[in-house]
Length: 226
Image: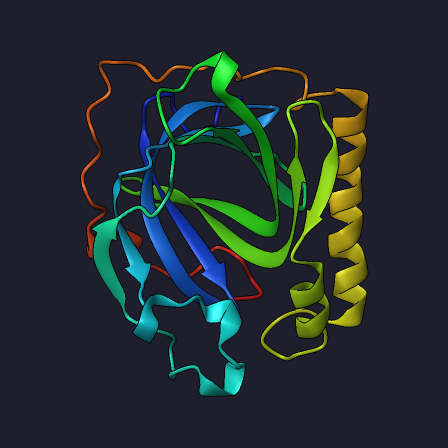
């Protein structure tokens, strides 16, 4: 695609939960084509993360106890057990993360499955800085290497449905439908669950990206619902 992000470019991956920014991490573009934006996210990338007292997650805090504007973001290494590929498909209500076992190198025989993050997302490009905004919708899918599907966080998703900070009952139906569409692809062994990317290795010439500067990521969200 002529107007996509160029391979090798560093973009800002911004993750929102409950309409508040929770994470900003530098991600490297592997490719950007009609199948979507494929990113490489290094597990130790210098990032910005909302850190709560007790190091909990915002999903576990009642919305009426959230501070105005959310929690401040602090500079930390990305809290991932292993580096990952992320596919952001166009016009889909999910992103797909490739998982490898965290206790060693990334190799095809260490592939652990896929994580299907149900979300709303949008891309943005300001010229000097660009990125993808992801609004997490709590319900997710885990796909085993043999493509068996498991729902994740169903109870928490149901409990948050109808709360003003999250999604309506009608939205919840659409969110689950997006998961079912990904589940059908996995069951069929269709892209991206067809073995693509299992043998991926990052280019050894890629340097560790630097921590995103606030001037680059402090911009209005690209998603209209934020």
